[in-house]
Image 1: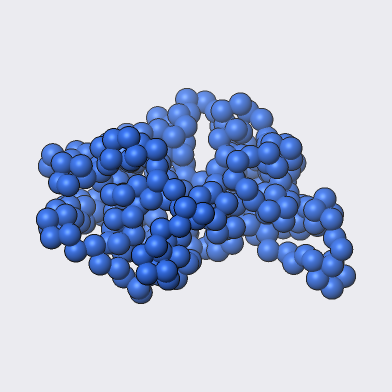
Image 2 (image 1 turned 90 degrees about the vertical axis):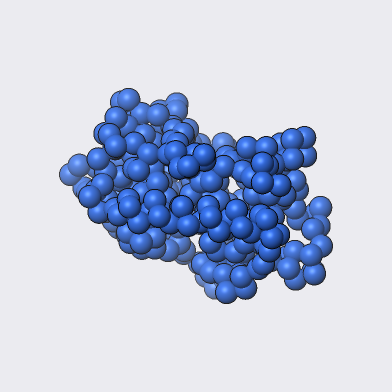
Length: 298
């Protein structure tokens, strides 16, 4: 099993620290939830990432039909929220900087015989940008929340002087009840859009009306790279020991932190992995666990 161990990344390190059993399911067995079973908040984040990639790859804002036809299986309410955000970003003339940008840039940092890998949403010659869409955007304004992910990227490339975290708040206006009981998706979208336009700084964290930009900036000097290096080293030592002993124990304290774990159905059914909820990544089926770390949701 040791020679089949996947490369270490921020996302796999996070899984291992949160719960060894979660790491085992995802990183060793390659078990992942089917897209339609993901929590709606996670789907919204994936949808926003897709819209942002289109904005920078093709210099186009996503259309409603593209959002509705995307293979992420969001419900009509989530579609309306995302499209309202897209429309507002377009109409607020938020700047799109395509100059010298690289999307999903891979970074590698050598550590012993391993390489710590990661994927940056947008990489520029002197800085990087990570995008977040959340109902709790303040969560991403704290250094402690993002230092492992962003610190790993900055540690891998000394040319990057800072990181901008572009944080978008997912609208939480209520629908389907009271005076909005029979509200159509189009009408709900319009209500969300009007609310976003009326107070853009509430939805686009750090919005600057004159510069037409938004986000929270973290400078390289704010990160303790020595501590980050030690953390990866310690996780690697512990991971090697866990592989040898096979002690992939669960941490129930993280089952609902910060949101319900996608692997809870396995625990609640005594270890049954339902094919109606989960699938095995194709590469794991063909090559077992041979060096297969890809970018996960943030």
